[in-house]
Length: 193
Image (cartoon, rainbow, N blue to C red; front, side, top):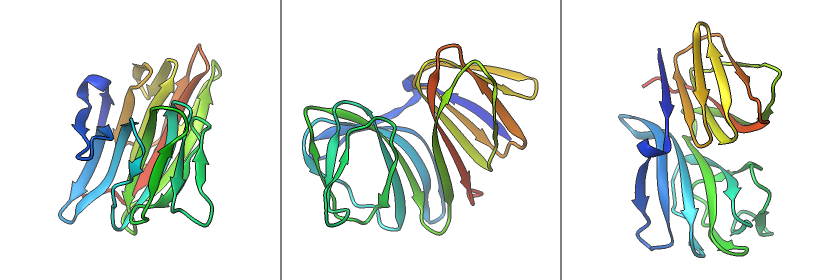
């Protein structure tokens, strides 16, 4: 069992080889075959291709900026211009990204197909306590506001851009907020390394 709060100071930041942006890796888990899952935030500064990730399922959400278009995920382009609206696609898809009007920041969940099952929800947390079930791996990213999390006797305060990582915990987590916080709540199963 483990409980971690990941702050932006702990992110691992890497510039893209093509110079079109940077990726902040929040957390990940690997096994002997490589990546099991990864949570990251990308800052996209210019149009360009997405990196290819074979056998990886991806979910992407716009965090800030006016949006971007994904070309190659079907007959029509996919416009992502509403913050915190999830869009899922296969990592091996050849995708070109074009920005709507300037740089954007997006949130990414990657999971290895057939090994990890992911559930992702965007929730608004208010003053009424919201009780959420825990998965073998639970990740809660605070997109805006401040959240109080209760796990049994533990009380944790989470600020915007914090990620709560709960591994092999059982039961529920109780969340509340005084400022209508927005969160990305992720449950992963099949993650035992």
